[in-house]
Structures are given as C-alpha cells and as structure tokens.
Image (cartoon, rainbow, N blue to C red):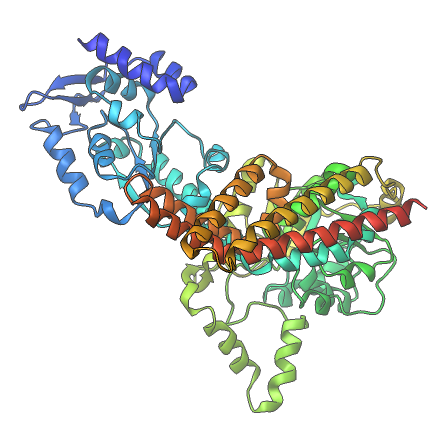
Amino acid sequence: MERQLFEKNLDLLTRNHPELARRIQNSHPGDTLKIVPSRAGSPTLLLQAMDGSERYYHSSFDPVREAVKFIESHDIGRFENFIVYGFGLGYHLVELVKRAGPGSRILVFEKDPSILHGALKNLDLAPVFLHPGFRLILEPSKSEIESILEDDRTDFSLESFLTLTLKSVVETDRSYYVDLEQKIHQVFRQTKIDFRTRSARSRIFHRNIADNWDHILQSAGVSCMGNAFKGVPGIIVAAGPSLDKNIGLLKHARDRAVLITVGTALRPVLNSGVIPDFAVAIDPDEITPKLFNRVQYPEDLWLVFDPCVPEAVVAKFDQRTLAVDSNVYLSQWISRYNGPKGTPGLQFSVAHTAFFFARFLGCDPVILVGQDLAFNHYRLHCTDTHYNQEHQDRMDRGLTLQDLDHQKYRRFAETLTPTMDIFGLPSFTTASMDTYNAVFSDAVRKKTRIFNATEGGSPIPGVPTLTLREAIHLYCDSPVKNKNREIRQRVTPPNVGDALFPALTGQLNKFEELRSRLEQAGRWLDPGDEDNETAQFRFVDELDAIYRSLMEDRETVQLLQDFAFSDFLHWYQATRKIARITGTAPEKELYRIKFERDRRFFGELLSAVVTLENTFQDFRDRVVSHKV
C-alpha cells in the first residue's frame, strides 16, 4: 500500500516537476526521521535527535485535526497568494488547497528532501500536486531566490499574500528559514519599488531614449572597460550628509584610486577641487540636468549613462560618454539589433550602478563614501548639492535650513523605519533605503572586497566600516598612472549595425498593422444603429483576438508594455480577477466585465501603438542619415 501511494504521488509530481520528483525519489530519510502512527491512526513524523530527545513534526494525537485547526486559524479567503515554509507530511497543504481558489499561487519552501520522501509514502497528495498554482521549491539557497521567484514576483508584489509557517519544521533550522524569508521579502520589495518607478516614469523613459538616439549610436559601451583597472582601488562617492566630514580627503586619493561619483555628488566633489574619473547618471527625472548644471566639464571626466537620462545631461560631455544597456526594453531592443553596450550589474539605484561599474572595471577594493542610507538630523544630502542649494534659496521665506530639512523629512513619515547608525545611535531609514542597503550587503557574497568609509548612516551588514582616512592609508598607497589615457585607448565609437535598419522596418510594419486592427475594433465602441450589447460582444471578441496574436509576438508586447506600463499593469490585474470567476460567472456577466476592462484599456493601447509607430519611423529616418 505504501509503495503504491508513493508511486502515485511521484507520478503526479513528475508531470509538472520532473527534476524535483527525481531528487525526492533519490533521497531517503535517515535514521533520525521516523514515520509513526498517531493515536488517531494517521501517520505522523517523529525526529529522534542525536542526544536522544524526540520531537513530533505533526500532532502525535491527530495530525489531520491539527492541520484543519491551523488552516482555519487564518483568513484564507482574503488571499489569492500563499507562501508556505515547511512541507512536513503535507497535511496543512491538503487543507490549504481545499480553501484556496484555483487561481491561487502556492509557493512551498522545504529544506529537507528526505521529509518529502516520507510524505509521498504516507499521504495522498493528489489535491496538492494537481492544484494549478502549487509550486514546491526544495532546498533553495539565498542566491537562487531572485531567479526562483521570477515567474511569481508580479502576482506576489501586486497583491497581498499570506505566509504560513509549519513551525515544527522551521525550528529545526531556524536561521536558514529566517534568512530565506528575509531574502524573499527583499525581492518583493525591490519589485514593488521597480513597479512604482516604471508606472510613474515609463513614458519619460521612452521620451528620453528617443531624445538620446544619436548619443546611443555614437557612444561606446561600458563593455570596452572590462578589467581596465584591475586591482586598482575604486572609491564610490554618493551624496549622503556624512560626505561633509571627509570630502576634503578625496584630494589625497584622486591619483591613487579610480574615483566614481553619482550625479548628486558631482557638484560638491568638483567644488572641492577634485576631478573624478567617472560620473554616473541613470535617473530620468527632470531634476537630473540640474545636478549636471555646469556649462562645461573637465576633459578628464567621463559620463557613464543609462539611455533613459535626459539628453541635456549626455550632451554636456562632448562624446566622453559610455552607455550601459538599460533595464527599459526599448533600449534593450536597440542593443539587440545594434550591438550591446554592456551591463556592469544591477541598476537599482545610481549608487548601485556606480558600485557594479567599479567592480566591472576590476577595482579592488571598492570603498563606499557618502552612502549613509539613513537620515542624519533630518538630512538626506550633504552640503553644496543641488538639494541643499534649493533649501538655501527658500530661506528668505522666514524658514531656517533646519526647518526645510524637517519639512522634507516629514514627507517620508509613512515609510520611515527605525535603525541604528554605525555609532550605535538611533536613526531612521526608509523601506527603499533599507532595500538599497541589502543590495550592497548581498554584493559581499560575490567575493568583492568592499569597505564602508561613509563615517555615518546605517551600517551595511557584512561590509567592514572604517574611516576614509584609514581606507586611503591602507589601500590607496600607490599612484595610478595615465588613467585617462587608458580610458581613451579603450574607447572606440561604434558603427551602426547592419541589422538595425531592417529590424526597425520590420517592427514599424508590425505597429502599422496593429494600429489598423485596433482602429477596426474601435468602431464597435460607437456602433450607430447596431444593438449595443451585440456591439460590446464584438468589441471584446476582436480585442481577445488581438491579445492572442500579440502574445505570440514577445518583442512588440514588451515594447508596448514598457511604454504604457501602468495601463498594462491595470489590465493584468483586471484579467487576473476575470480568471478567478471564469467557470462560475454567467457568460454575459463575463462579457460585461471584459468590456469594461477593454474599454478602459483600448485608448491607452492605441495611443501607445501610435506613439511607438512614430518613434520607430523617426529612428529609421535617422539611421538613414547616419549611414549617408
């Protein structure tokens, strides 16, 4: 009987997760794990520790009743998505899928594959394995979590989820599961921040990339700089308030390290008499040109830029520019057909881009300066930044600089999180800055030597803290000769790729055809003498046909989605709600709900198609002018 149940469960698991099934099949419980009958007769799981102590993973009296009470203690009906820590024998999962809808996502994390072997032998897990949203992640490492969650991060970030913890399993390796949960929440926080950014700025990204078209074609990529300064210390200068303490020391490091500043820190660094080697700009906002407000920049200063930044910034550097491949799909599309520029690493913030660029250059160690990641007396930025100058310009209204700092601080009130600074004193950070901190902390595991010479703000877990004076003395002890000559020798302006013009023509034709189909479907929104309900049904059917054909053209979908990100996000959420009631709601009701979804989305989709059609027409014309 036990063997038959094991083979049945294994066969069901193999259908959707063959590799996972093989791992479970080849793992066997050790001598410490025992399957024993409970008093109610159902099997339970017993751990016999090396010291002779015993622990039950499920109730020794009635594990089925225990699972029912556990699931009933949570408001399952309020949630569509679930994260479960600990599989055990699966009693709680059987009860969960009874109450979770068919459209739910259920992610189960389990460290010990031998427990699964016992579960497959002793419990009918068909309801769990056949649930369309069930997914088992076995023995994951923290470094794998981001890729593991790739297909689920949208749903879990857009909608709330419920965490269920099988404490008896988790307590066997508490630190492992705590670290795992922290990493999972970090991924979802990053995704939420990314979604908010893209929702608010997607059209700005598009506009700036279009404006930067000539710069993209003419600029070399950062890929030409791989290991250009291998073994040379790199100093990343951000604009946190602590930079006021040690900005004067950068003069002593200028010729003994590669100096990289974020845009906000560029003005105070230049005004201190120091010329950095690189400035980094990735932000699309209108304020970015104000950070680069000089008429002219030194010839030894190079700009590393994301094509999403305002064109006015790139133009100031007289072709002393190195482009990166942006996270925005329009930029990636250009790189696919005109050659990649290179991506040094995660572009989560400008400071992260600068850090990963230093690592890409081969810099060792990498020293962080001005990376406070917390408030300092209500301040986020050092003196002499654009933000500080803005406050000084407003002081004539009867407000002190401290008053203005406090006003800005209060705008973050809802996201403030208490923390301790590097001196052990209470401070405050935000959810975003806390996530930025975690990205730096994760980088330590990549075998990069990092030191935090910020001299203020939040400590970065795993990153040693020291003063900038100590860092310069210990690690910046030799002159670095001919840095700018090394850069210029590596930089070769690219040619326009042969594949770009036909790719632009092909994509332009797709947009023209899609626009025509949408305009045809749009006639049902004003049907004239046609029955209104019939017209609505025809509109929905034609839009459904357009959606299906679009799903077969990933490039076009990605271009449209990145342009009208917020509109696609709303459409996706509406579609998920429709999927949950399909099969239970009457057909007419489904059509009515689909019509409302499509009516709201139609105008934005058509507008996006027309805008991209015009953009690609302009791109193609300018490629012709470049080739002439």
